[in-house]
Length: 254
Image 1 (spheres, rainbow, N blue to C red):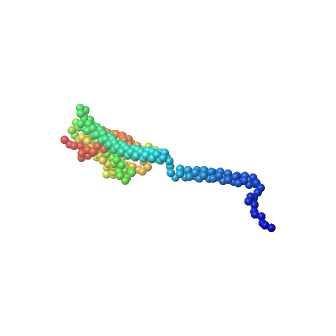
Image 2: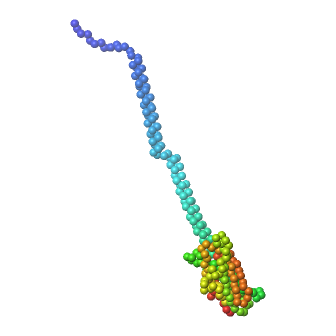
Image 3: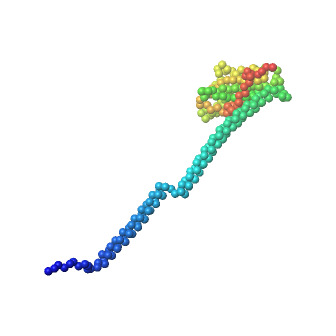
């Protein structure tokens, strides 16, 4: 018996569910590809922004940098100007202090020599013109004392005598007064001798106890012929009083 040729067409049953599943997978793959593209685009955009600033950002950065440099230069200029002003102010204060000292010294000289000249004043006696104190270096309890004595130039004779000093102050919270015997040199136990016609400066050194706080100086001038002359000076005033240096530390004889 002769064999039959295979059929040209094969009839298979239609599977609609399989087709739907295939279409569903294709749709999911397409949506996934879209999501993947969107994610990659977003990532690339973020990386570009982080790596390279935009044109406006670069312009803003240049502007801020220029302003920062200008502010730095302004601050440096102000600092230099302040330094120059400080130096000028210090120099001015120093000059003013020097001028004040010169004026104070000139006033002291004016009073001193006015006393000597006497003008139209009547014949006057002796006067304690000036009392000045200076601390002895490296010796806190010792002080150099200068006493300036004057008398009117109308006098025609010399005056001689002695000068003593006492110091009033606090010791153990009590007011006490140290006499000349407790202050002066043993060689001048009777006082500082003087002899002059117009003026003379007396110099001596006094020593104070360590627990003694001085407040006032008492100077007593006792001429050989005449009444004693006294003057009380506050300790701080004597410290701040300028010393008028006279030629030869004594009067100039005519």
